[in-house]
Length: 196
Length: 196
Image 1 (cartoon, each protein chain N blue to C red):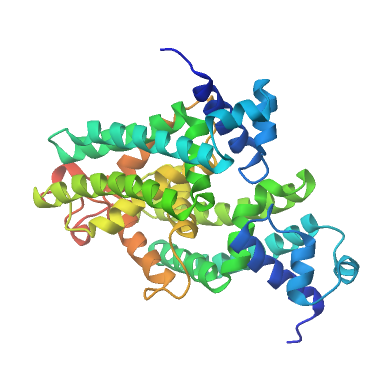
Image 2 (tube, each protein chain N blue to C red):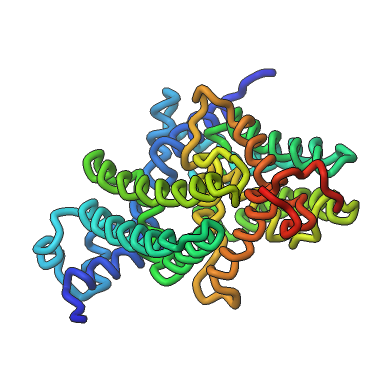
């Protein structure tokens, strides 16, 4: 795969936005880090906000695709595990894009935010779909799937606050531990012995 | 209680930091919103960062106290419920202070961050203490209390991303629903019938 100037701009911008924050990073900072002139950068993107939007779209599309591969598994418990693993793995492997996307939403224009919200909602709908299948199949309790879905995404997304790539433990390992916790709860002594 | 100029500055600053972000808010913006001169404001605080630090300290002390009141309950399950309710209630009732504190940590100086981290760690240690008591009493499974505590705080803290004060449903109601979910899990059909 060829890395274009456009790709390089997105990668460098995502890194700077993650390190310094979107507001504190200027187009000049991005151009300088790449050894480009501001004019050369504006040849590819009209504004800093457009760069943020492209990064967010890329991150969300990748996340949605990873989630949809996971949700294809017929067993709801296994599909949920794979969905959580996929989300955590995508986060770790695309750290600057993912963090920029999650932190940058509030800085997008209303139109661009609508487009990213649609993808975010699609990812959440996919997760609810897994939970609904589980409830219908009797694998899960009749929980409020909106609430349970939000809980799962809270666990995974809050990782941007404490997890750093390159830590001894992989993000996907935390996702597995969270899956076990959310599945069995704090009280359940022997889940294998129970029916639905 | 008398509202001092200092209090008014903190309140207005917390509101502006929450709405516009810390980086995008200037000392001039805060002074202007209060009808003060910049010089008058600098009479009370040496810098914008000092304002952020005072807000963060206030928010964290309030949160720690609310959590410590909750953890005093002898029953671990009830203590956990009260802790989660107290955290969510404190968040909703002190929204601008809470959001500023959670979002502002990265903008604090290393020394000030060390002081706020200490309080944050104390709050988390209190939660782990409840969980450990529950495990020791056989009320909870022998879970990893660090992981389970982090999960509980992820659920509660991620609320800054989707919950807005004045919504039809109170934050504390979501905390109760999360408590039920984290206690019973997705799979547990009849927790009342089980031993530890």
